[in-house]
Length: 232
Image (cartoon, rainbow, N blue to C red; front, side, top):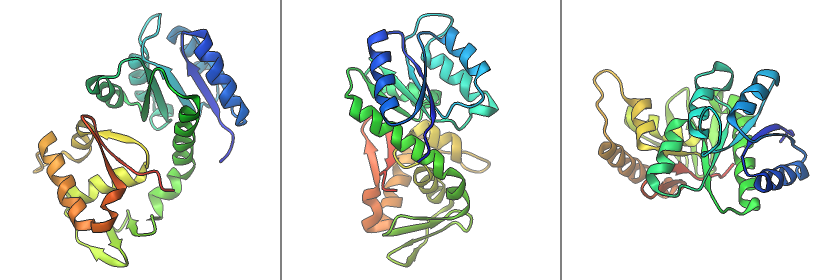
């Protein structure tokens, strides 16, 4: 994994300094900002940022949640990983962060080693994103050929519906990323397809049944959604 440029936006200096120090020990270049106002200036002047760590509640012109939405509206940062830090621990808050465009969240207080692990997951996904889109996803027990819409478990092909395959590929392309039901709905909703949160759960249940032993790779995040185990 190449060393990356990470922007940390956190208004509490002690936390900001600790995060910066920890990430620098892994060889990353770390830029810090105490507000969205300063972060916007940094983003405009920096050629490339590989990952954002953003506190939800920030002083200035907008919150970290609003800044995340703004980032996602820019083509340059549509796919750049965002980890949101928040003192808000209710599932509704976490769902709001994920729906705003965050790839992951971590609640305060947190262990810096856990944060480092989350950063590694997001950067690893970023490193492999291009090859994942074009090549076979090989998880040992289960293999997924995205372009061919083909799934095999223990070398036996599994017949999935179009919706089941879309859900599985969403999860498998970003191991460790928590997807909300709303994100699944937005991705698979289309002409002649009507999907609700309850039907997402039904599709997941059907998918798990069809992939058998590989079903353990799909994890339920209670009150929030689902994610694929980080097994790469």
